[in-house]
Image 1 (cartoon, rainbow over the protein chains, first blue to last red):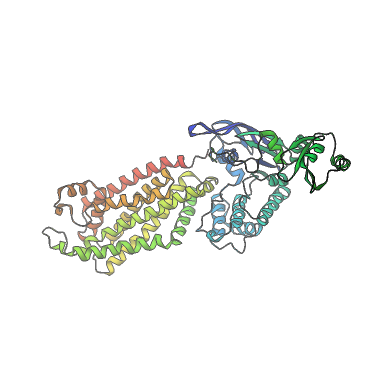
Image 2 (image 1 turned 135 degrees about the vertical axis):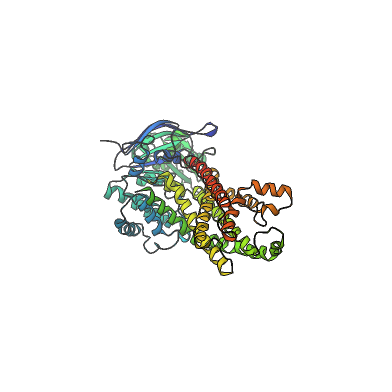
Length: 319
Length: 257
């Protein structure tokens, strides 16, 4: 089966020799949600700009919907929809006017524009705000309109560049639901960039982690976490208990980890939570709180790059 | 979708944007006429100068609002285009099958629509306060045509500034530059009556003088072939240069593959 997105050795270099993307390979299957995860400035948006034909690559090649992004730009654009990082809307136009302009420029026949506009407004919950100027929309409303615009011409492949950045939890959840519905009901392939671990974990069938313009890990969230494999146990010493005593017990089960609240250990297979509880009991070391942390995508990022994704940011990028 | 249809949709958006920014259409409609009223009041005595071509300074000065209005329309529309670049709206348009040329032509279509409205207003106000067109009704139509061509020519330079810089501030900074061209021209006096030599030379080298003189000739003289040929010639040349440079700048700004 032909891949929805196929990328080989894609490179983008900016003036001054800054390499935002340093030769990435990736494949996305039709109907798949691919999460492209990385800190700010890692190369996510530059990759999206290349795949959506807005930025020519410096080297490498890619096909989107079976069309070469350099040689067949117009064909790629007919196949895709894109909601880029900044919800670029005209504050002086209404939501309805935006959709009508978008539909017209996509060559949708006049007779279909009004019903399609109403359908999209209904779908993203903007029917009542349809005739208000965008200047009065909230951030969440703008993002939802942005998504409706990306879907106007019924694209097979959808690019969403950090679609939930800055949204409140309710708007974020509504957008997630719509992305899942698009995949489930319409078989749309979604290429989703995000810096939120939870978003990639919840939505993506597969995740690619990019750092310094290179993909450092790729797979299903479950497989990536299983690759790291080792959960962490964290405990807060009870009153009167010395942290050193707790460390002594924990140290027998794995490698001690930094912890802001107490003592933590990454298990290395010598025992599980029950064994730790028994060991604490027999050593008479009291704890007030005990947690088992399953590995997260942040642990994956940490293992691959030596840094935590949360709060990580590249300072010298074009993004 | 045809290029014409794309252009019409983008021009429509441009007009809607202008209508929804009252300062963008009230200022060009009011300010040039206010300046005309002030100048006419202060410089009416100039009609007594030997060789002055008319006894109505109002008729002599009516060409001025057409040029100043074109400057307003041009800068406002250039700022709108630059804002589209800054906000990323241009990327949204670039992701549609829209042809690259449609962006420029659609943008200029909106400018021309504004130019047409302004020309009708200036002419109507002029006629209402007593200006008589020596070239008659047909001359009025030619004034319309020339006014629209002037807006197109100036507008192409506004678009060029927006495409080259992508900055609203840079486009705004064009206004004083255009204004210098307007003031160092034959807007206040016929060139042959300007006594200061450097000013007369500068006004003769200034293309804006020929645009003003072409409109003015239709108002106060009737049909002056030389003035019209120079006016239309300069205007068309400016439009060709502006459009060519803008067209060349367009792919740099819309670098889609």
